[in-house]
Image (cartoon, rainbow, N blue to C red):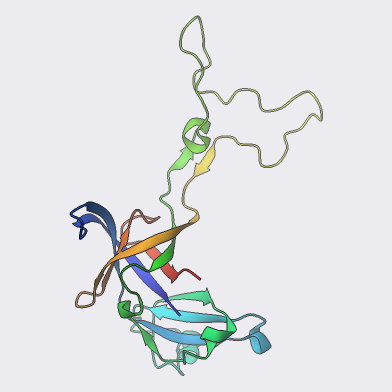
Length: 204
């Protein structure tokens, strides 16, 4: 199973073998510990729970949960797996950046940057109104409904809270692996701010 809990460092660029500059997002990838393996019989689905980081004084419930793995991570995340990969891992195993190889296709999941309350132009890319010939409606949303049925249907695109939602970017390529510093470089942009959690998972 190729999956890791990483944390975004920032962006840089590297030179490929052809001498082309490639924009790369650097991800800190310290070793992850397998804290639980869920199966179809007991849990109704198959998944692997990974832990990242360390907590000096975990709560009693967390200490009991982590007793089989002998770890005290501060962050937990689950990754769905199929039956074939379930037998490859055991509770307490450690996964590091070496499970990936340069050229692997992965998907990155993170929480996008929050932009607060925004208008329809920034949030939904509406067009603005004309600024000539006496136009007065520049950034207004315009009509939001007709006379019937005297209400606004749910899901209408309007101004509101933008960003800070889970985003998954697929078909990214691993461009750099630094095992000495536990860093993985992914070609292209990855959702989320610096120091934000990024779940990296290999494509099926």
